[in-house]
Length: 291
Image (cartoon, rainbow, N blue to C red):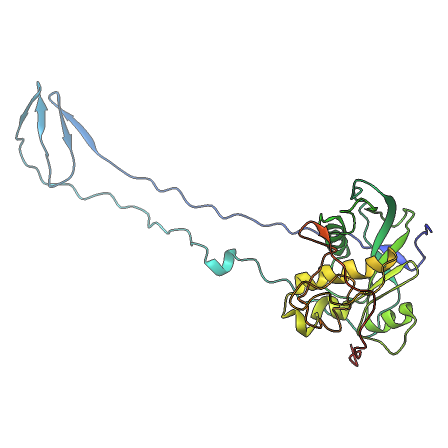
């Protein structure tokens, strides 16, 4: 069912752009003396006359003492930027409290429709106030890229997905939230670790977005793709699944946050161009304490 943004959602102001200045180099003037003598040419250098050219015949010319060169201004070369100066500084780490404000910034961009057939669902993307160094517009683009991927939920022609801004009607909202806000939105006050889908809220725990889980071996990009696809999959009506074959890829609807059970990490509903699923069910994995 379509919904509209709440009063607690607002668009994030645009950040200022920085300007940089370039450094120019001083031009250097070179001085050369050329003297014409009797139809010949005398070039200063190498101790005086190099040769006297007359009627096409080269004859030695008299040797004259070379005048001292005029004084010149000292030339200072422009400093060459070091590699460290041209390398952009690393982005600041994302930080967050256990409990945010409960208010959300909403990404403003409206995206194109992803998918060529099936039911159209529109969604908005929000980030809770209090999560630092994470731009809501950039996060919105990341989520949209995952949901539009050819390996994603729009690949089999059953669904089309489109991102909308703060004022657009939406069928669901993807929320990046702090652990305590996650527990409130998900209706489970004891779980500060996982993410969830509750009604039209797809709630991603920022602690998992930033820190991931140990059994993904530091592959945070794959884990984030899995996190978005798994929770949106619930919004599309999909339940949990089990690992179908040890050593093979896990179904995206397996609870990979809690364990792999012999499968390999997998972020996508489609594997090798085909829908990849497992038996219906879920494992009795304990939920880690804390966030």
